Amino acid sequence: MIALPKPDVILTHESDLDGLLSGVLLTRLARHLFGVEVPLEAYHYNVWRQRDPREAAAWVADLSFESRLDKATWVIIDHHATDAAPKYAHLIHDLNKSAALLCYELCQAQGLGSPELDRLVHLNNVADLFLEDDPDFVLANDYANLVKVYQFWNLHGLVGGQLERLLDHPLLEVMAVKRRIEDPLGLEWSKMNIVSITPTVGYVNTVIGNTNLIVYQLLEQESTPYKVLLTMVRRANGLMIVSLRSRHGEAIKIAERLHGGGHANACGATLPRSVKNFPDAIAYLRQVLNSAPAKSTPLNSLESLFAEIDLKGTGSPR
Image (cartoon, rainbow, N blue to C red; front, side, top):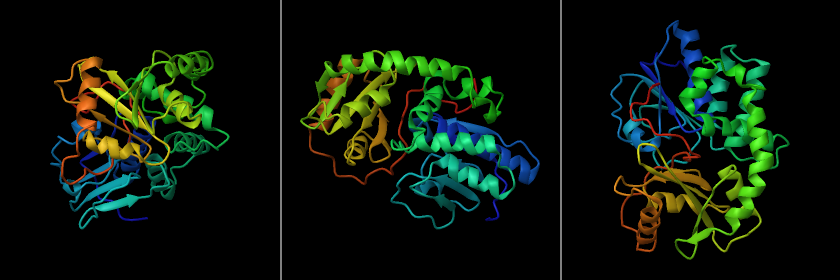
């Protein structure tokens, strides 16, 4: 195992289970190695990009490697594609593993593994990498949906930071019922409510069910002529969030046009604050995506805004 520097802060992604597990696992590792409680901060991408990497030392998980993070005594643990290469920072990177699995492997090297964590990290890996052929795929998405429905800091507080308490949590029964009842209803409704943005991008209106799984089924069944399907949510603070999905790597190109990022087939972006509602968002998307791409250096790929979590500007618990 590498000699990890003592971090001043641990930074993680706020919008999904992968970020939650990564952040908590790293706080445990720091406690074990240094005997201190290192502050944990969680960010959505648009806020994260505006945060100054001011600390002398930090551990960053599930937020992608960028050139601005290339600082000595900074450690980045991530699984997103990136065009940047570190000169000073230590990058722990694997496209085929979730960020939480990479963090857990660091913990296991220090004897911090357990059967409960083995199971939880496996389920997260299946959901985050969307491993549809895994026998735990459906259950794994129920676990992932916990964070999307109940939000990062709420769930963190509910289990008191004890990840093991998520296993077989009573709220999973709620997720299972929602999946069995809401998803089929939502799929049939959404099939009839797809709006064209461009000849290859369609907006899927959703009213009920797991949005990610509904969009996945639409793509798998080839129920639409569009290679990229997007969904939108409007947060309490007024920000419009776009999530994009595809099957053959087309989604990330659209996300980058919108100054977002993520995985090749699962990514997202935050629309400008001037876009206040869904009609405005559709008009904005049509204008941007039907125009010629601006000639600029593409942003690094970042994880999906699987996202469906309320944005917090502070990056810390309420």
